[in-house]
Length: 416
Ligand code: ASP
Ligand code: MG
Image 1 (cartoon, rainbow, N blue to C red):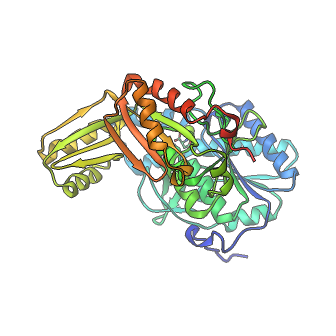
Image 2 (image 1 turned 90 degrees about the vertical axis):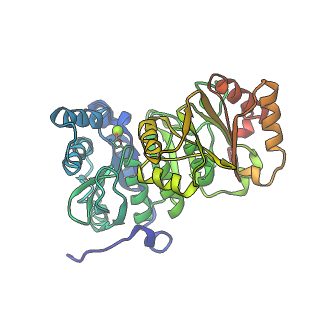
Image 3 (image 1 turned 180 degrees about the horizontal axis):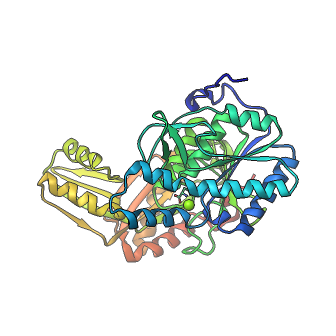
């Protein structure tokens, strides 16, 4: 049938669940870095199909392909035209999908690879960081009905002006979550090079535990405060559509971490779910400026702002160090007096249980005090306490807070 089925992502969730047993499996760049790994991915997809699932895979570009393509663009032009950049870099994901479809055929299953456009991912017209506005999944449904494994090129779509667009770095995660929402999939499995979400960065805290489950809110706070496992935008999208996300390793069969709706069991097992940190933020102090004028200017400059503290005529805020040049330029244009510092890092204690258990702030500050650390700036949300401390004390603070909140204990993993 040639009728076009429109499935607005915002509308479908909960209203039109697809046939049960649909699973979206997303594989990141490391998981498809070589043809050998692509064959391993093909095997995993075939196994999922043979277990009775309707399988939709979203693949990233192989290894550093996207960076390589961007490098080529910059060799040709210092300011490549955004439309053509998207034509170029959307290719990487197509390569992975086509190769994987070939490997699946050799394993005796039917598969079809689709570009973002063919898969019905419709976006706005902003090249390089387009937003998905609609998922028209008719073609995917048809292929699934015909018993095929469907491979969708991640990170891309087609704009309402019929141009190829890309969704921003790491955008294959967004493709996967949007498809899971539109198809009413049981889960969105994110296969990656780490085993899941940990109670702290295991490189800093060797006793850190892999969490069995975290709530969307906790994951959002973790992603915003240094955990690099999942892109912030994809967690937001998953929360807005109630998509259950499972972050797991593509190199083992071990279960990873589930990100889903908060439930009682999460709160009972441990008040705090993790301690995150980042040393990639700069802290700015601006004198005598109207907050509206300041933050509008920063937003016009396209830079992100994290923690904001205003006391009297002075505003202190933090932002990613990678955007320092643009932030500085925006502040200069405002003609205000400002300073910035790069000697601080942020340590955050995160946990949904904080809402109902008093004493978390007390324990946080006394733990830091025992280390002789006096936080320079403190910012809180209902489920987070973030402290800016000397950058060279960040790791000590993470380790002490991790043990102060018993995160090395078995219960911290929240297994159930
Ligand atoms: N290949 C793109 C990137 O490297 C998209 C993705 O991997 O999700 O950002
Ligand atoms: Mg990539």
